[in-house]
Image 1 (cartoon, rainbow, N blue to C red):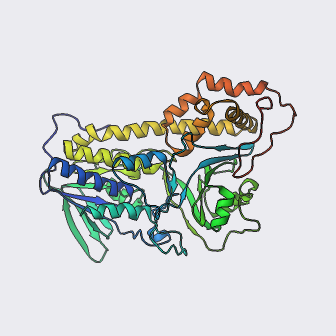
Image 2: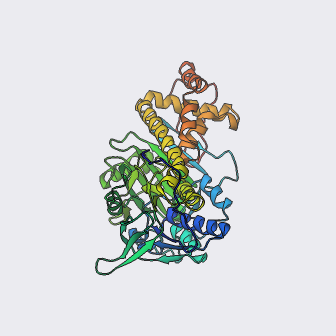
Amino acid sequence: MGRDCNMAGAENDLQLRDGARIAVVGAGPAGSLFAIFAWRLAAELGRKVQITVFDGKPFTQSGPQGCNMCAGVVAESLVARFREIGLTLPESVVQRHVRGYWWETRAGNLHLSPQKVELEIYTVYRGNGPRGSTPGRNVSFDDYLLGQVSSLGIQVVPQPVADIQVPHGTRNDPATVLVGSKAQKEVYEADLVVGAFGLSLRLARQVSALGFGYVPPPTLPSYQAELRLGADQVKEGFQDSIVIYELGLPGIKFGAIIPKQEHITVTLIGEKAGKESLLDFLAHPLVSERLPPGWQVPGDYCHCRPRVAVAPCQKPFTDRIVIIGDASVSRLYKNGLDSAFLTAQAAAEAAFRHGVSAQAFARYYLPTCWTLARDGAYGRLLFRLSALGFASQRFLRLFVRAARYEQLACRPREQVLGRILWGSFTGNQPYKDILLTALSPRIQWRLWSQLFRRNKRGSPMPRGTAGGSADEVTPDEA
């Protein structure tokens, strides 16, 4: 993320005063949350501003047309942040309450349960369900947030933004957005334009062409499929747990199954993520054992190919323009909704308390982006090291064995390997903390000491069962 911020001189007088107009480009979580934060700050500071949110995506529709292409996991950290600002997800939006995580590997499996019974992790749909589903009600997480925006009296315009333009005259001139279709565009002038357009390649290219230094985040391909199993089969096969897979499939960095009500969401991330890799993934014995007997992939299913940001953008601001959410910086692989919350909040605080100049955003918004970006660097190192280690089935078996022993022999707060995995899977803990814990002498001793423990039976450890407890290994056997 670029540091060239032109910090010379004092902060200028580009402020959001009474009558200021704010255009939010994108009504996903980042855009909706920014609008909510902006409305509250305006009320707190006694300023009368006009906030308008633009997005052409109908979140109340099923299928890709109304979906923001996300696996749809609301982590405990985001639930807590929502509660702090008075938001509570209605049960109509929640698809499933997650009670734990399964880690399925080539060398054994492990079930992780939260240490706090009251922990809340939800699965949701970003649109109104998969294509062909008939939910009978609006279940869209994004539309719930947008409804909160509308309830505050904020204007929501269901039209796409065609272009964003910086001021062409003096620095006091407004920025502009062009709204509508090719045939008819409306010009909207704004004292502040907030780019919450996610990883939209079209808008990213247009903003890059403005010449102030914005470069969109680098991305990795992914493939997501919504597969209908039926409510009973989802409950039986997954027991309210998200399953993370370490299968060593070529070209796939990450694979997971997220249970919904009647569907499961299969997510694959990697250079070879696609339909063929999905079929290979589902045919793997560790995956197929959780599916109903005789179940086959339907000929037509709801799927998408979203890009996943793997590093931050370059320079997400200039005078009167600030970029937030995935278009700016997102937590690596996990909990991108939390990053949307944090960047939206920081950008709103900077704009209302310090101004909408590049200098103000550099001083008061950029530190939040840098915090997330630095943590992403630790995350990349963590995943690189784990990929190298887990490429060895012997080391993978060692790790699983040590984690199982820890579950049996240690009190919950002393189960450090479990906390490392839980933080990595949920995204609730900074990657820096996870990495430093994993490399600590205590953990290294716990891992490598397993090499010198003898298995009484001298045979491979039995596998656990889906929905059951961890594999039955006594401390002496571990």
